[in-house]
Length: 315
Image 1 (cartoon, helix red, strand yellow):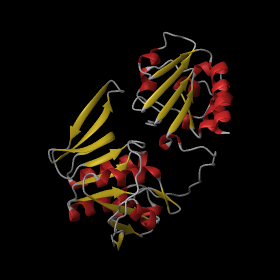
Image 2 (image 1 turned 90 degrees about the vertical axis):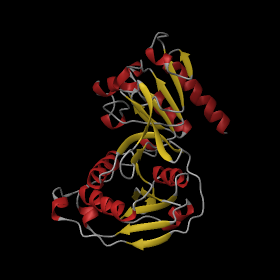
Image 3 (image 1 turned 30 degrees about the vertical axis):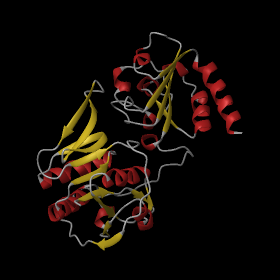
Image 4 (image 1 turned 45 degrees about the vertical axis):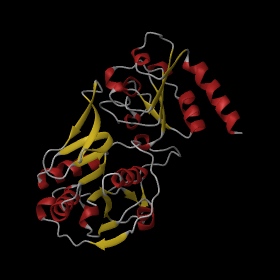
């Protein structure tokens, strides 16, 4: 069975949920091999199917931006000739993927929401042109390097050999052009990370700047909070919460849009969500054309009622 390289994202050794999703996808393609820069819980990786775990310990991978990781990944691709390379579709993941694909002469696909094998070829599904089209694509040269959106699959445990192999790689001087001078951990909100959350509740212009109802429903559901560009541009909420073409792209199991009209810029960032619910006083809001369920009403009335009912059912 051909090897599939999976770039692992881990913080303080804890493997991220999108990385576990990638290992699950990799098992349908071939034999998953985890690629770890720094520390990651090897027991978790083997518990989700990793047959091999390539570890890189050089401090350069922590001290400099993405170039050293991309250089090392390209070298590993050249050595192992994998069936595919899967990376998280994060800002860092996509930059590493693009650099590694270029260096290894391989084709690149970003923001895939599905990866499958069709007639021996690895194919992907993507939403493109600001969400106007859904396309199937495949790489025609080299090992496909594919950045996959979070929540594309549910992570499924499966025992893997988990054989750890420490890889020695000398980072070139050319890859050390941008050094990390300082870093500061993001303040914990108690909510899931927006791009990785299984449920997202977003608010827009209809909130009038008061996100308390949106946050209340999000907390009842264990969801992340998002926002439209209109809300961000009005200064009501930080840009880090923005969902859309110029914000974050999300693909949760459930997306609830409250007081958001549904401009194409916003739709581009959320329309691959599995189930979409919209709440808006304007029954002509464009987002109603896209949703699975729509509620015509004032979010300040609808959201508190939903929050009360959800908390009641949670006991």
